[in-house]
Image 1 (cartoon, one colour):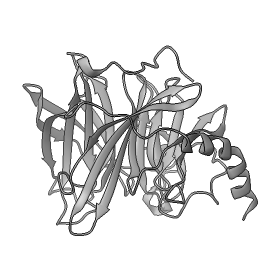
Image 2 (cartoon, one colour):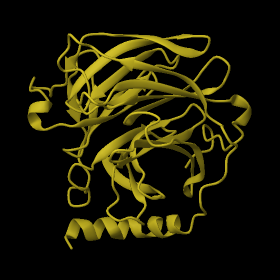
Image 3 (cartoon, one colour):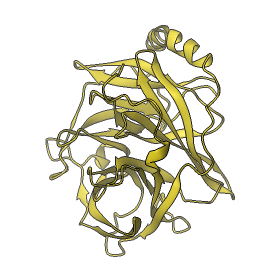
Length: 315
């Protein structure tokens, strides 16, 4: 066992033990998430289009930013009629670069996550390079944050798929795999130029984290997927409350049958004018003709939002 792995386990064992004692996911009302539309996306004139793995929406749920897993950024606007998705426009692609103008794809980047402070900093994550950084949404220029002690901990091609903020707007990054079937997923947090692991998330079966977002209610929303050849993809969404004791009050909001949607990977959570929470997702087609790029949206009715609100009382 390497020194880094021993240090990681020493720091995380108390949290991992606590997570193992948590009860199973709490029950939720049947049909709590209401479908609110689905759109197919394509750009025949853009050879770089596809592989959309990250999604960030503005507070009105209209303007969006999406990243492909080949370090390309797309921006656009969603339209709705009668509260359901009805159309989308997408602007030309922008290659992500470093501060010296070198493309991120040439450096092996596999961009998978986005998280934006309201009217502020936009963070991105790269799975293959185990990187979290800052992204300029106008130019595509990126700047990496200092790395954490995770190089011997995170698995190859299973790094930071999910990126979000906590209620204090600190970036948190979640790897796709935890290393063992029964081991909770570590949640890394960046603060004061350092990374720590203050939280863990209970691992349940073969569902793996692929997207995350901080909701307008102060809860963490986690998008997970499970893939079985021939059957296709199943998707699941859980939400958690940030507390001084960790991520608690686990709620299962959605679990789809295999093949209901394609490979949903990006998640953006926002509130509409009625006070309902909207969960908007984008799928990664892996640049395969047998898959599709789609935007899928569900609605969480305001009358069900009686869980812990952590906007003013957070860990």
